[in-house]
Image 1: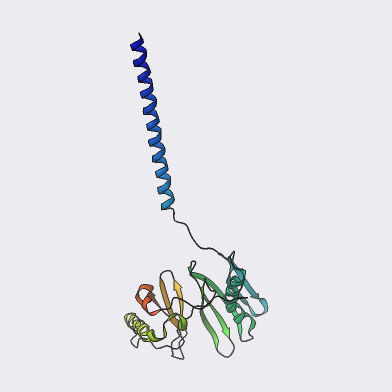
Image 2 (image 1 turned 135 degrees about the vertical axis):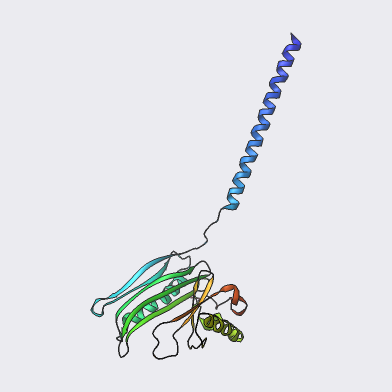
Length: 230
């Protein structure tokens, strides 16, 4: 009888031990799953947002949309960026040279390094007539400085970049290749788009050439100046 009780006691102890091991194993597995889930989460790291604003001048038939940065952690830098973003609207709404202006925008690139905004539209320009509008504002989000062709391309590498543009334009069917003054840029995803108005006085359409960033990264700058201070 005593032996039977001992056997039962041992069996119960063994069952408890096995149950504990199973629970520990399950807990360890759950912890590992949670760890894997956290490591695979892709977190969007953009620390600001965009609000759509507009300027309207009814008596001149002007309506211009532009973006405004909101919720940026630095109020001073946000103010400088918003001055740059509104400049296009100010140019076409404040000048007496323009009427019948219609401009909207799209965001070409938006991350914690670059905010690139492309403005497109049309207007009537005094003494010229109807014109097409293509403009852009590219901001170095870290410093709030504008990124333009002149400070984006390394000065001693401009010939290399123009060779690339010339070749791509010829592939697009433009026999004379690159014939431009005042080249400008905007960013579209992982590409840089170079655009300009042809030298031909009769030209009304902008030429746009998209180049993967990987093709020109050796010819571009990574810093665009220090952030402004109070």
